Image 1 (cartoon, rainbow, N blue to C red):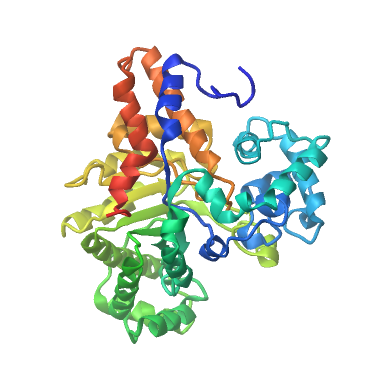
Image 2 (image 1 turned 180 degrees about the vertical axis):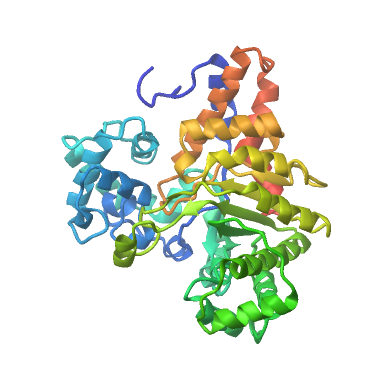
Amino acid sequence: MMFLDQDYLLTTDMAKKLFHNHAEKMPIIDYHCHLNPAEIYENQNFKDLTDAWLTDGHHYGDHYKWRLMRAMGVPERLITGDGEPYDKFLAWADTIEHAVGNPLYEWTHLELKRFFGIDTILTVNSAPQIWAKANQLLATDAFKKRNLIKKFNVKAVCTTDDPIDDLHYHELLKAQEADNGFKVIPAFRPDKILNIEQATFAGYVDQLATVSGVPINDFAAILTALAQRIDYFHQHGSRLSDHALDLVDYAEASATELNQIVAKARTGAMLMPLEIAQYKTALIEGLMRIYHQKNWTMQFHMHAFRNLNTDMFNQIGADTGFDAMTDQKVGSAIASLFKKMASEDAIPKTIMYSLNPNDWLPLLTIMGCYQKDVKQKIQLGGAWWFNDTRTGMRQQLTQFAEQSLLPNFVGMLTDSRSFLSYPRHEYFRRVLCELLGEWVERGQLPNDEAQLGKIVEDISYNNAHDYFGFFD
């Protein structure tokens, strides 16, 4: 088998049939990403391949790549600093030569092949040729940002949006929807109001009050303001929220206690761990009730250990490649939360991702206790971040299948800031077909292309289409 040939990763006859006859043709719903809606609307060309792949502005850069470049000893000026774009590209080419076995090696070459038609292996020696050809193409209309989305038959892109956002660019993109051929849908990400322990909390409460028109003097008013913003997002097509739960804890509190905690936080006073847990628990419970009423899907992204390198965080900020996974407990808190909300029949559709794969089996077994009314109402999210490798994907798919109903899975998302990341869906679909093909070879599944092809098509697109309701 040749590198990235048509049967790449497809090691059985059934895997080849499932991918080429079924997975390959399906559209994409990218239901969680970090693309900037303003960039989608403005539809500019990238300046060059460094701008497209690595970016000069660190807030929209690819921290996956940056971590490898640091491991290669590349100076920071050629990563997030003021180095020349071509020098940064050469540094990435040198890094990728050493990245064998890392999914970025495959993703990088898939992107060269699928977007640019470049089959040449990226090395320091081949870099000048690739740089010239890619940059020539990047300057054309076909490589404007919306056209990059269209090229991969993407039907919906869900961005990550703060509750106080006016969604101006989503409104502009809505007017272009027929011409674009895809939806750009806001997803509600209330981390700033959830993270009461942060120094920015008090100021953010004031912003939320102003935007929502709700005076915020107590805990209940925070939920009222958030409900107003959820209505606003709903009017703009949103059916999805997302929560970063870096640490997962559960603690109940009375209304009086919650009001005292909010008042204390607004003065800038330091909160005790119990107070933080009480506030976050109550806020999540309140939001779950609203999401359930709205028929929204709630996403939990759990157990990221963020900004570990304090010096670099102070220099260049968050989301720049200095995060890891935690090994904290998750099961008891999630079980307590769902037990409480089940008693009120207020569990919304939920997707739970943990960055630590040791959490997947506990989460799957807890989820199985609260499935109700909706097909796979509660899902184990796709292998996320450090786990979106072949190994991680296979583990997540296998555990999902062994503990629940894999054919109901809503499939892959990019979680990316890059317009060139859509070949990751192909990567995921190839891994899925590879795994099912192996199960057929071992006699675990019937040798029935029609049955398995329907499963592949559903996981690739149909389940997400039906589950989220973006097109209702």
